[in-house]
Image (cartoon, rainbow, N blue to C red):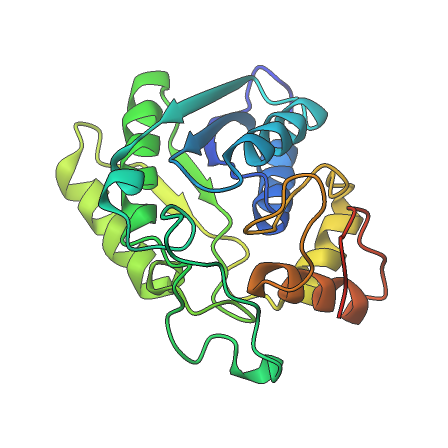
Length: 231
């Protein structure tokens, strides 16, 4: 498809593994515009570095950083409230996702998607990408297919244009399948960052690190980012 006929897409880009693979898919087929959120998360500086690096590596048309302080003020999540410790993943990794963990940021993705829809209306984009994953995940309620079906109906009812859609191309994939897809696409996984607490070295023991490391192992690949420790 020529550059003259490529449509625009807004990509919610955290800089994590899933987000990076989703961004690579978007950049393959669209003129992609990255939207990154600094919301008071523990690894805010590291995530910004990763997200901007991913956008640059993939040739995104623009990188927009938005700051929002409400999650830090509201608290209630180990990612934004320093009084709540980031827990290690359970020893039995099969229990990951059995209950909503303390790293869940209440209704976070609704805020992210709302901003993405607003920007999409302004720049004339009809598609929004987000790297939500239901399988092999921590069980966050805003990463389920029904959530995005409902949000797309909200967009249809609540926007001037009505035809913007949120796409979740990874939502039904296993983490190992996401790694394989990322390798196939040439996604800059070496730039990505998934750890909930480490910024120089990934901790290797939080749920996000454990899920990521297991995915690379099951995919037969080596995770290219540095870890303080590994299980």
